[in-house]
Length: 265
Image 1 (cartoon, helix red, strand yellow):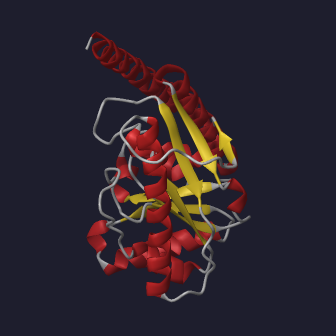
Image 2: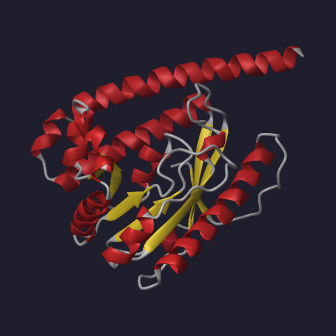
Image 3: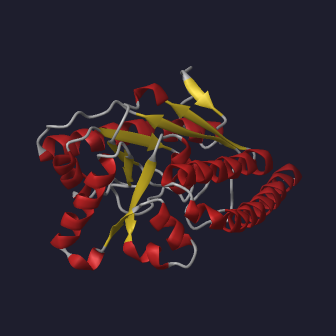
């Protein structure tokens, strides 16, 4: 009982220290990046990646949470649509470090936040006006196509919001609309970040967040065929990663198999 209480106390302390360090680092970088409004966008994205990697370093050193990336070699060169599982705030910055020239599809209201929203504009993120109905898809697609044609990777969370690990799939058809109209491959991304950085929680658990880049889906599939293929790929892989994470945390699940990966980014 005493050992359990000590473990819980240390988990709380490390989580507290990390959260303080993470947000202090964020504020620091918001200040550092002010002059970056004057540099080319690619330079700005490179600086954002430095911030993201510094945040991952803090997560590893303070909270004991490492990162393992699988399948990096599957990422094709040039423009692509990236459909990622969304369980945590973690992937909103960590995925930036994986891709060459990424940008996000996000709700328009985030662009209105002082400083933060300005940086989103500098990164040429793709806003979605959810109140515009069908017109929102047209506007989103036009902007996404423009960025993809410049060789960028368009990251979208197909479920639209964070979902707890193991929750039933809730994919929306916006991703299928983009796939059909962009004419670029779609890269499915599975992960288990919600086990270690739970949504709407203070705790950051030690262990290894695992991300798997899956085989790209070539353009040209029919809407339903693509939608089902993408969902099946992400859910199957995320379920396997979830089982590995649960085993690591002592919550049950399968032991991980040896894999080729890129650890500790």
